[in-house]
Image 1 (tube, rainbow, N blue to C red):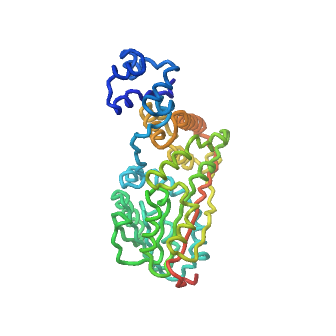
Image 2: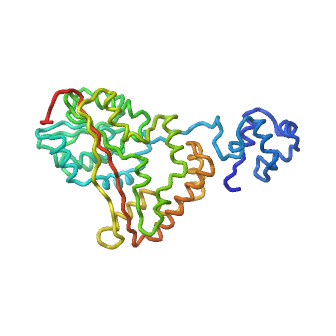
Image 3: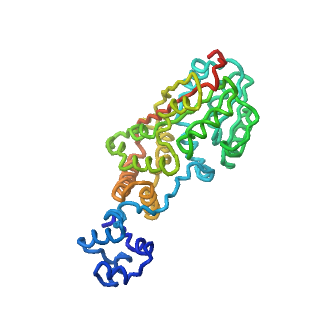
Length: 380
């Protein structure tokens, strides 16, 4: 019964009728309707089809197991500045786990063949994580510019780069609408397109910001692959890989706001559509693991707990908010409750293993790139 949240009150008000009118239409007392709406009682099972027919909804929608057609969709907000301004710690923990330094060096020297100074534009730069990886590897004289919606992240980036002595320029603004005058040799983004509402529009703007012959580079993990990428020793791998209705959430977000969970695997085709040439796609070779002992694994384990919000149990209010969000984004109530319960159980198990947490995780970062024009630069 915990999974049932009757929507009779909501439906009645949408229809503009009183409890007495509903009672008369269904053949029950107004007191019965009142008890249904307050949660003091449930309708007899035989009345459910009649109530569903009266309100022109399914029984699942009547019982709150699925969202009602008129429920307002609440966008995820991951493309907004405020969302990431509050997740500085999350960004630092996750971005430090994505790359092997030698693979980034391999891309720069052997794949992109950058041998002369270049101008880099990092779109949705956050605190400048990409630049921290690239600048030490680029030819001397290269420049780096980062743009981000979040003023807090830009401020943090300025502080980090100033301490390290790295040359950089920072722009606080909306990348899609910003009027760039300068053109760049490398226009790059990391873990951005999966979060914005219109990744195709974002990618087209990246092409506009590139000079003729410049590289447009997008680095994204595939959401589907992520579900299977984490193994924790002594836990059920199948349960860790469980999706429990997530595909419905991804589909709903794609249809309602354009957020594309599969953008990583679509990128070669998106780049072709916007007219880029010499398109290639590769996968980062980094694998993260910890053995559950004292040999440098403590921070990795703490990062894993924090990133997945397993550090402490969710409060009842947070659990309800998360369940309601998942229902609003396409899951039925049973799926949403099951998903949250599975996450809670996993968090509980991980906390029990905290001191000896052994795991393997594959970031599976897909790096896709193409050139703005046929002009060959940097020996490519």
